[in-house]
Image (spheres, rainbow, N blue to C red):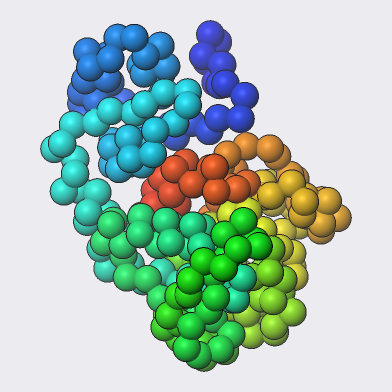
Length: 254
């Protein structure tokens, strides 16, 4: 990182080459809100800033983008088939918001689980938060059928997944194939059981970081940690940054 451009603690930057669209976004930002000191420094990729930076305002600044990119965002994941692996006890917002972000970008999402019917969601692990309809069983799924994988959190959800051989095998196959994977909160627990956390740089909810270190991972405390085909985040508070990074990662061809 260039001298004089230090990253604020706990913030991830999405670095892209300079181009006219990005310059236009930065100029719009400067002229739209001169009172926002961070405005000219926090400019996301033009395909992501409007959808994820402005939809959920972040305490350290805003990202502003021209409307000319809105159509591009809707097509960014067109033709992509994304697996979402979750079980009973999934944290509702960590499934609902990333899935919506994927669908808004044009992806087809498939909710895989351990049983047919519906899975029960939770809010803050304790409160009932409705259900999600299961699209297919993970025991019948193949990594070859999907372009990427999303692993939401919630304590109970990955605790069930990591003791299911079909779920663990599916996660391992996706990772070994080098396909993009995004995991948030307690989601990385299943990566440990799949034997794919060793040597990777990632983050998670604080309570499972010791488990990750014991599995050989390099654990960092950042809103988004990216290591090759893998991105991870800490908690629902990181969802705006997580969703933006996920869509950007999933949009890239292997």
